[in-house]
Amino acid sequence: AFSDQGGALVLVVSSICSCVRNVASPQLLLRLLRLLYAVGDSCDEAVRTQRVLPFLVASLSNPVATVRAESVRLIAMLVDSMSSLQPSDTRLMPDYVLPALQRAATDSEGLVRCALAASVGNLARA
Image (cartoon, rainbow, N blue to C red; front, side, top):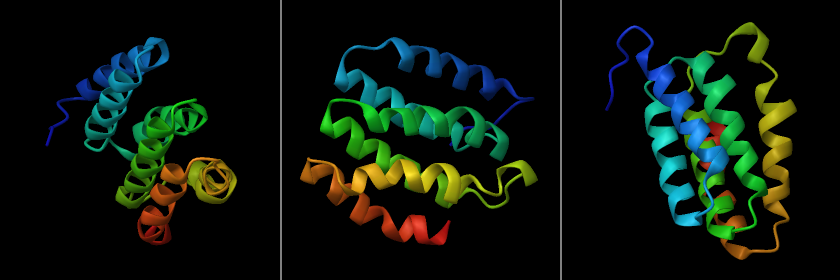
């Protein structure tokens, strides 16, 4: 695990987010999303909700099914790891995360639907 030294991980998260925006390869995107989750998991809740989560949610619209499935899994793990939210983020699940994941429930690819089904436990704890 990482240790945040005075908010330095926020810079790393920002750099990874910049790469995620511009990567073309689905395999590289998968690696970047996993790295974004791993680094974001060591950051405070505000960084997770305001920087990491939006990129994971945006990846649900990727044309590659493996990217969408991995995004579902990472979103579920990220929201499950959050213990306390800021007052401005109290409606995060019902207004943002669940509507985004609702598209995964009706995805044309079984891989994405299976990833959502496997993540239901994490989402229920969140």
